[in-house]
Length: 77
Picture 1 (tube, helix red, strand yellow):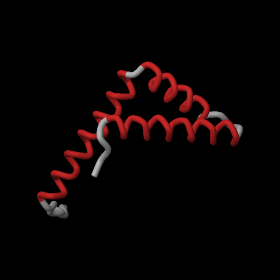
Picture 2 (cartoon, one colour):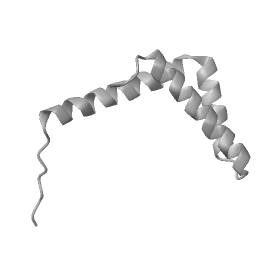
Picture 3 (spheres, one colour):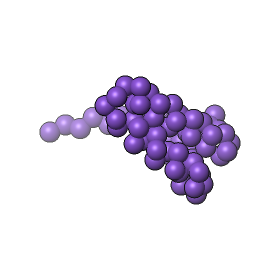
């Protein structure tokens, strides 16, 4: 059995670590804010609805919550 090893550039490792930290900070911000957490939960419930209009409204709400949280934690460059 042969294994293929893909070399990662150190900058990729730093980028991946920063991305994971950013996602964690974003999620913590949402979970720590009762309004955002409730809106996210509501959006996720709507997104699971078979009605396409309701699903679209849920996706829009999820997008808005994520956008607000990203802005709050300083964005990601």
